[in-house]
Image (cartoon, rainbow, N blue to C red; front, side, top):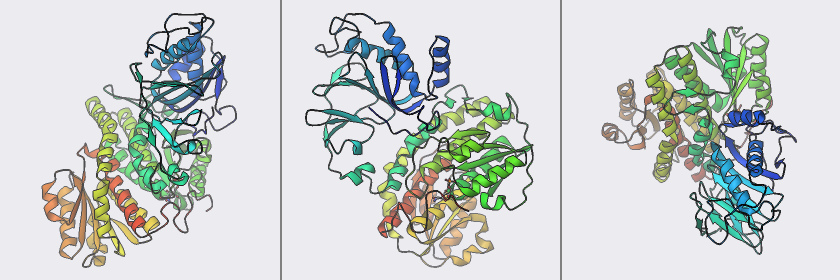
Length: 569
Ligand code: M6R
């Protein structure tokens, strides 16, 4: 058993590499344990010694501890009766399969979070014990062999017969036997499917491009970013290391400076609206490449938030380093554990989006927004700017965001049809107001970088100060029109471009009949509290750019002249 790790707890190092072993128990794990700190403390109190910084080692200890309760034969078989309920020795001597299964299942009950888990135990060296909740796990049925992996590509050299495990399921396998149990411990037959994909398609989970796969991953990514950080109903937030930076209570910084590049910069711009509207703190957002040469007014009263998916962007690193030299504290928002930015920052909040392969950033952006929103709520709470009821409501809505994103994805084919109607246009305008304005910039950036067409994002109110001169018959204008205080204003801007011949595509709330009557096409977005709408409104724009780029035959995942990480100035 092995695992190519995307680090969440503990930097990439040999010590933290999988498999992890404690006593007779060996584990590989993909996912995140939410109550990691709690469990670790408890285990240490009980005398366990940790060798790594990973959350995975928790499983080894928990299972090992459980097995100590079953050192000798205990009643009840797993095989034959088709049930996994009670512990059982199968062979009469020492720990049998039944004990091991019971120990693993008891350990899993203590864990909150997501896992895809493969366990080996010395007493049953021919067997693999497999469990899943939240993270993907696929079983493979080969010629006199059984296999398990996080993803189909790993299985393809051995078999094309696979079965996707469901949350809560458990499997025990050896070379020739295989048993699958549902979440109630009842035996079930695996639903097998035959995979037709070639290895390249399989890496993309059947999607044509990594970018499309990553767009579709966003509901799960949002869940992962939130995991362990919010508590429904109580309004409690758990942001790693935040007390180190902000102290136990209150908020003592006079202002916040956000620095970033590209898409991460756009996330920062949304963050400014949130922090100023909800937490009432002054915020400036500066492109890192400008910040470092602008003689910024930064001192120990400034909190610098530095955002980078890769954590290796040269300008962002240089700007963050400069801010530190000027006595500011740096809070990093980053996707890559152990990256240069995370080493440089005083505290880092990871986005947990998983590897982003497509050069055009999609899921990283959404996860950055989630982290920025959590920081906003934390500061608003510390500053007494948000009532408990409002906080609970906002957290509840945030937890529903993955469902809303799923709804938008269900409409992907409709978005494609709309995109294909305008695919041959050579200029695109994106307009919006408030926290959606940065999304107009981001929507335009996506289109520029992957479809190689000219696109500009504008604050809708700025149109008549110049950009409206670009509007001519048939020019596509994408307008973001959520229900908000500025709804009517954006509608007037839509009217202005419409009368000048623009082809208007609007994103608006589901069922907005009024909007439907004003424009040429509508992309419906589920209704939610206004503050989290930027999380939803970006998704159709990513799909829109993707479908246009793909229709034009562009190299979506590796657009010309661009690199995933810009590590030089
Ligand atoms: O890794 P970073 O977030 O620091 O990267 C910043 C930009 O280079 C990046 O967002 C770039 O703009 C993307 N290609 C946009 O899709």
